[in-house]
Amino acid sequence: MYTVCHDRDNLWFRVTEYDIPNQGIASGQYRVHLQNRICDRERFDALCYPCAHVIAACQNLHLDPMSYVDDLYKIEYMYNVWRHIFPPVPDERKWTSVSLAPFKLLPDRELRRKPKGQPCSSRICNNMDI
Image 1 (cartoon, rainbow, N blue to C red):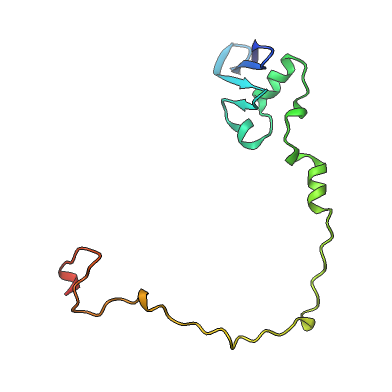
Image 2 (cartoon, helix red, strand yellow):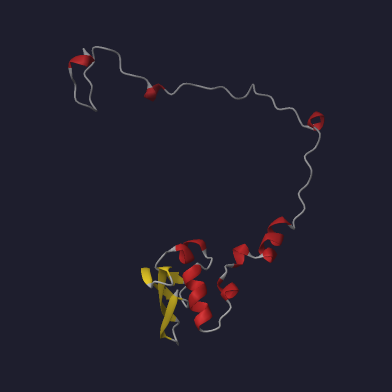
């Protein structure tokens, strides 16, 4: 990859990717904006993880690409997710019994079809309705 820094203050780069580096055949050019965490490939802003173009731009200015990795991927974040103690599920024999008697399933009369012979009101009537 060939990297050109267009704006050092705002960290704008143009990264040219080569398919065959020895022959100089370019496969595409991508704009990278490190300050806003944007790359034309959209992997950087979607995954919050630096793609190869971002790493190439970081190498141009000797920046650490790991500083552009979102906290979501860091081990400290993962540790904080699992640091809480989950209470164990009690034995099934100790569960309180639940009576299903108060719950009675009643049909919704509004969802019923109209009896045959009545004109339909919400759609176009055809000979299948007769």
